[in-house]
Image (cartoon, rainbow, N blue to C red; front, top):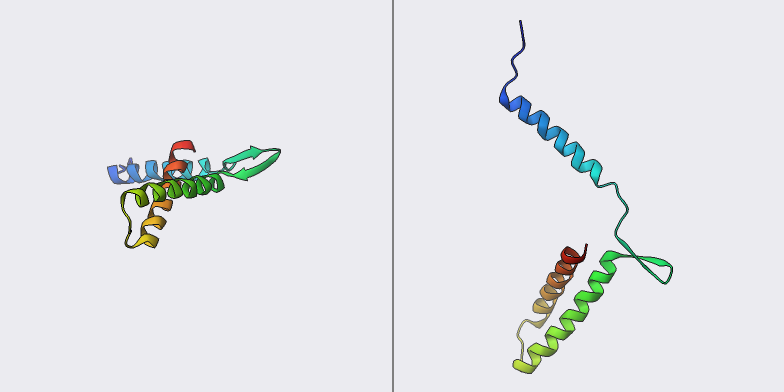
Length: 91
């Protein structure tokens, strides 16, 4: 008597293979940037770019507005936003 597999079982097997393939594809070299012979991690450059962009944004905001309320929260959020966008665009 043949065994009839339901659609759910077949989908779960396909998902299992996709999950395995996704987990194994992460085993690659980390994004590193060579600078004068030394390799630095990509996130370090994203953080530096985030700080620079926050400083530029701060200068532009202070020219338009004299006082910025919740400055610590705003600058922290902008730093996270700029760093992650930089990572998304360049890596």
